[in-house]
Amino acid sequence: MDKSQEAEETKALTPEQPAQGETECPYCGASIGAGEKYCAECGYEVGSLEADAETGAPKAAGDAVIEITVADETFGLSEGEHVLGRSEGDIVVSNPYLSRSHMKLAVRERKLFVTDLGSTNGTFVDGERLEPNTEHEVSADTELKAGELLIELRWLEAPEVSEEEEPAVVEPSEEKAEAPPLEPTSIDVTEVDSPWALKVGDEQHRLNFGEVRIGRKTDRNDLAFPQDGYMSATHLVLDVDLDYLELKDLGSTNGTFVNGEKVAANEWMELAVSDEIKAGQTKFIVEVIAPMERVDPPAEEPEPAPDEEEPTPEEPEEAVNDADEPEPESD
Image 1 (cartoon, rainbow, N blue to C red):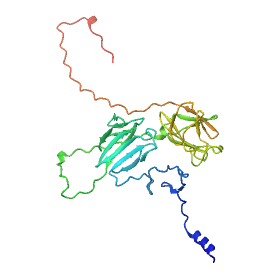
Image 2: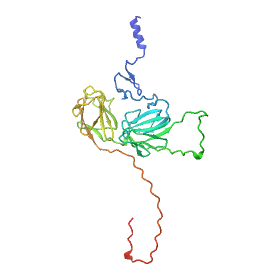
Image 3: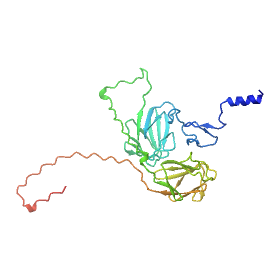
Image 4: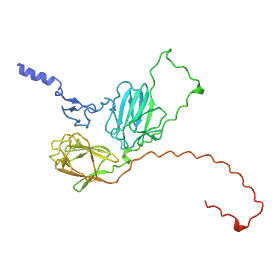
């Protein structure tokens, strides 16, 4: 056996190594080429939070101190800062009442601090809307909401302490009563329709909330146009919210045009009704089907004051004629 044949057989027995610069998608395991921003198989965005190998849920750096449950998904928070949003941040939950980056959750010394990041539908603590970019401490019995989404909070058990550090035992009479568990009041996304649509020729495409990808490849996009050879595989992405629609060109070969002007790649721009989008040779017109208003949690009504007993009226000394008697009030 000559050396060239031996080298070929050795190469055949050696596992194929990824090309230089390639990375492995943490969600589906597919190879992502050098310079690619998205996984071709599942759409994972390179550089976003890695996923747990078994559950697929986002990892939390370090040991989790607090658990939060939002829209039936549970996430562990470690010491540090975590951004919760609909499409950006460390914790991503696809729900129309969340903004792209909705709030920041900071854990410091087992305490939790919440900051609204200028979200559209707001962040609420015990029914009161928070001022944007202002930090507030919350506890386990706090009612925390992102728009209409209830966020359940649970502090995990603290690490064991030595006998010297063990806190004094509190008498039962001094213990604080445990708050009853909060009932989830999250809104089912399937029950909420987006007000936005794109018209292509005579066809109208209703847009779902969240990110909507548009391109030539049917397996990579939410709206695919395989007949348009001038459109990139994944050409652009739309961010669909209750009261705004934004567009980002994903570095397409032939560019994306809005009202005849080419937009900058990888930068978000807001769209308006009747805007014309051109990707490849396909034109889209932005339409609004049913305008929607931002939904705020209902204000709590104050408890009525207790009724005071009215004094019994004194009997008149003299009888009055029927014509002078007051008319009874109608119910």
